[in-house]
Length: 113
Length: 111
Image 1 (cartoon, rainbow over the protein chains, first blue to last red):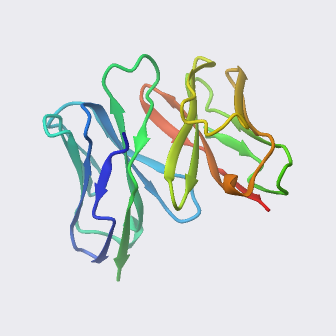
Image 2 (spheres, rainbow over the protein chains, first blue to last red):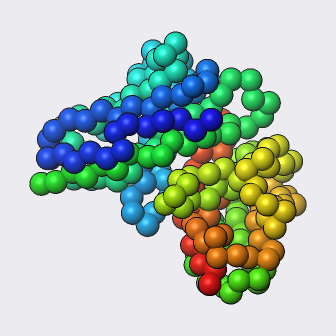
């Protein structure tokens, strides 16, 4: 099942904060976050494996609430380079091999000067 | 590290023609994925391999699509015959220990 991301798009001024949410209807083993710039491949940001875990990349951090089956990505003091489309990829429990990721529809982020 | 390598980067073909997309995963990665990205459907997983063995091909849209991984360093995705609705960006990705890296993608246009 495809996870649901919200909002679909957000416009920020440089220095402002934003939160992107990713929700699943199924129990999750892990949540992966990627950023994709126009015309480029998605780039790995971070993976969250445990409930309540938080990770960080630059001034971008994320949390994973296993019970609520959701993850949030926090863009703090946004920079122009943060512009792009953010995708969450979810991995379910009990898969036999590999890490099959199902991606959400993406959140477009535009950071303006 | 060279990253995931895909070829060709762009492919324009006519409806009915066979198309073969190629991928070289990162050395040492044991899982390989083929994704398709369109505006309408987003990023869809088509098929994935673990240790060269196809694990899940439930995302392959039709029998016109086939994928192979003859060895750990090479995979192909073939579409025969191609149709205009196959137009998309096709990404190959490889992973080790749950960290997945995407290739630059092949932009396929079927006219």
